[in-house]
Image 1 (cartoon, each protein chain N blue to C red):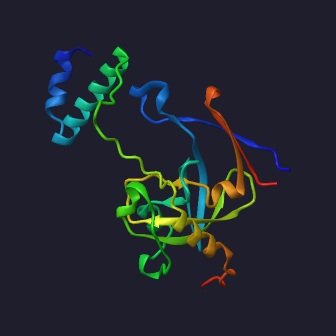
Image 2 (cartoon, each protein chain N blue to C red; image 1 turned 60 degrees about the vertical axis):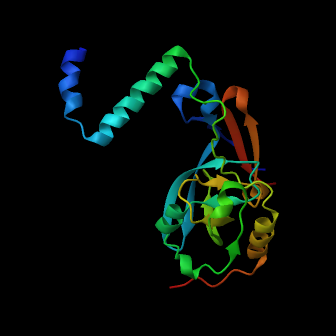
Length: 72
Length: 138
């Protein structure tokens, strides 16, 4: 499909899908160029709860309790 | 000793190439009569298992009925969490009890951590082969 054929279809997209199309093209280009999308000096959150020893003790205590009878 | 089951790493972001492969384990989580299948991240750096809010809701968990508050760390420290006990089934292995910190956040994937996934299962990572093996504890 040529760009001339594609453009009318792109124009019909909802705003959110236009943004997704932009994102798709960006990722495709980055992949082709071998470019990493990690940007220096930008924070990327890590969700791992590291050293959550209080949480671990609490959850271990839950495991140690006798099983409750099944409801219903 | 049960035979290990082998799984492939999952590519999370093609634009990042080889760096984006992660060990995601498919498993079933059960609570009362509700059962869901999830892909959870094997996270050896996580002290505990973590269940995102929406998955707990899908399992029929009621937030106000969970009476054990749990304080998580790092980026999850800002969200309330409560302890929940679930039954989990990995592959063809017998179901096991897993305890989770059920967090108010939906930005985190389900995490399998030291307490108590890695207490119940032995895992061998073959990162160079993009594979890992899981077997129940002996």
